[in-house]
Image (tube, rainbow, N blue to C red; front, side, top):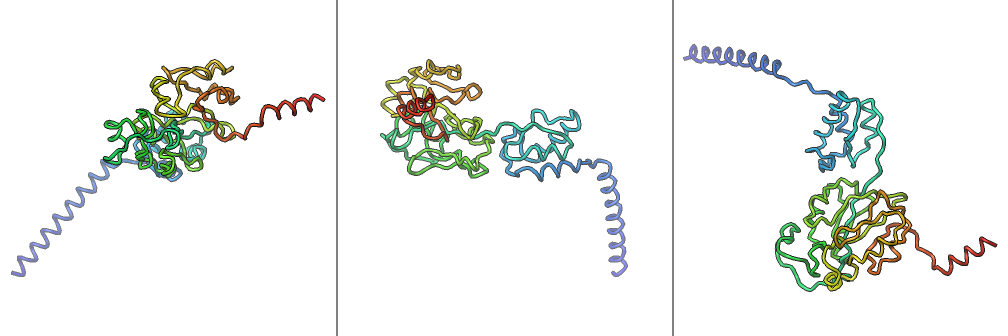
Length: 290
């Protein structure tokens, strides 16, 4: 009995040793050498795996950076909005031109005050679901539903639904402009725009495409496509997209003339100092001339 047990142990030991050798040989033959720079680049990324870079995650983006540096000696076309690309470039021995910071903009001002609710939605708290069944409490089919699909997708806690306003609001200090929220919004209300000089920007705070008469019934500040801003802009920065005005951030010089002529208050000027009354401006100009 003892001999049988001993022989069994010997056989199992030999068999285990042979299998171990085979596994070692296979592992050495098929092992994949990975560039250690990938780990270093990844450690300088946010780790949010938000997908704003266009890759599946931070690891995939780090691999793309290392590969591009090796093949092209460049990081052209690669950008991580949530991390410092200058550090990544330094690790890979390259230089990178900093891009203008971007931020998410919720282009809807259909707050509870501006667009009073006419109906109440009772269903799943999911914007994508409500969008297919529900025009919106105010009747505007392009308004923010306020159910927070964008909030759930944001990896930086940079967007929330204001309970008093009833719409999504972006935290400028936290937003990195990754674009995840834009993909989550079923109504295309959220846009990624340049932060602008001194963090100032001007945009049409509406994506409504209905005619003026219907818009007026649903919202106090909805764009009605009157084209007054289009005619007033001296820089051709405004274009009409159907019945909706759109301001091109690349052409806008932030003169704010469009803001002044908009009869609906649909155009938003963010982080600008308050304007002085026209009479005060004239007095100042007269004093300067004297």
